[in-house]
Length: 150
Ligand code: 4IP
Image (spheres, rainbow, N blue to C red):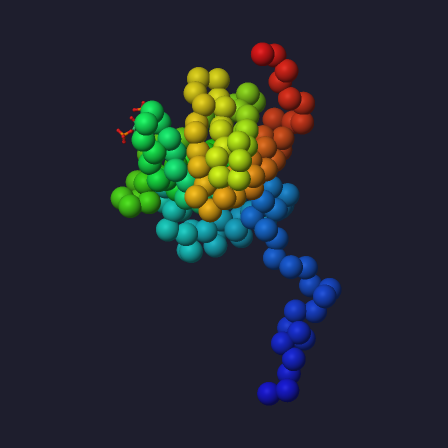
């Protein structure tokens, strides 16, 4: 009919937050997101009840070969990776205040941890988004000051 669709989304109503906005939600909002995730995400069973902040397929290189994994940054924080074919959890990049991300280009980024550097490639070219999200989680969890010891 003649009803303009714009009347359903007046400018005064905030747009839905992007996923990284989760870090700034209050407990009630986070619980709501978690309830949604329980119902809607096929990955929910793999992330130990944690709220997923960002997820996406990446190729994780180890030695000569790379494996395609669903990488999931969650509250906690955790960085889980799962095999999307078998829907099984394969591992977790260990979080610590020393964790550092390093974008190499639009596809490739490194996650440095004290004992291992993870070589990751986002085939869709959103490596910088990953680095931003992980760094934001680091600051949110451990504070702004970088550890400067080398
Ligand atoms: C495997 O190579 C996979 O890359 C594993 O990744 C990796 O484990 C293994 O390293 C590596 O040997 P192949 O599949 O070609 O054998 P995933 O666990 O994602 O399947 P992680 O989890 O540590 O990267 P090792 O050294 O951890 O076994």
